[in-house]
Image (cartoon, rainbow, N blue to C red; front, top):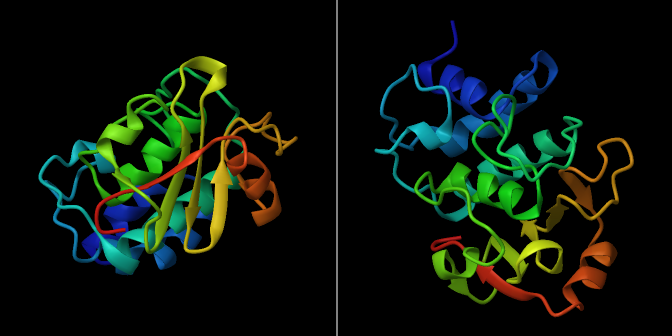
Length: 189
């Protein structure tokens, strides 16, 4: 029988039989030291007592979640998801980035491109950097770089998901960053 951390992480972060198997192996080390409110918790954001997971462990957990989301065929949406992998968050750019930051810091919550900068530190992070254009509506955009891999939602680069969460290339990210985006990072990442 798997240990409690494996069950919690698989149920909380990754959904679907194929992805759960991948997610368990990738996320267990990152979450092994995180405190949880209860082993029956069903989402990372429901664990108010959880402490932020910083450094490489937090970044590795975020990367595993981003990879899972980018292969899960989640359509772009500005509505809060009521079920599935991003339950409690939007599948637009800032909702997706918020969900990822929430993996490492459960107190982050669902932010917008406008509110995100006030909850982050300015500048590039050692492991994670969020590039944000803090404007309302379609004028704003956020992408995230985690341990050298780039992700976004809403850039339209993923034809199978209708522009939902997807991994992008460094060249695609460079094109977006050149459009007046500023770097931010979560504390400790």
